[in-house]
Image (tube, rainbow, N blue to C red; front, side):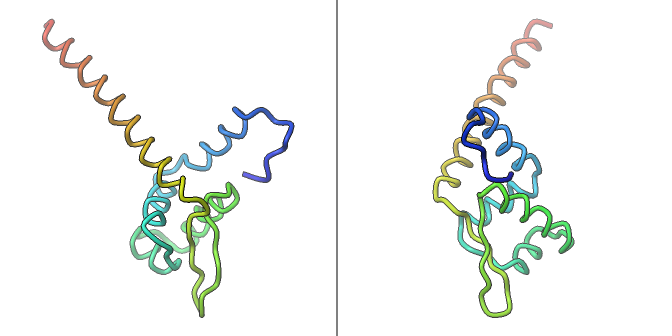
Length: 114
């Protein structure tokens, strides 16, 4: 995501942010980075992805403003930009648990009617 335009509606900016989170690898990167900063090599080892693929995912997250990088010795290290990213991931988990719980309840109700 590029710099948001001040005249664009908030829902458009939100949609752009959600698009930047639309890949499981990017979510996992954020989950790892909320624990603490990590060099690219450690992220690559943890995720088991090719360096070029990881670089693309990190670039999307960086462009969205969710992560930042800095050089430390010979390594590039990434960190989340805001502590609220952790809260965001926790809320997403709660929403997922709630929606899956409703789906399970609906399925159990349907099965009971059979």
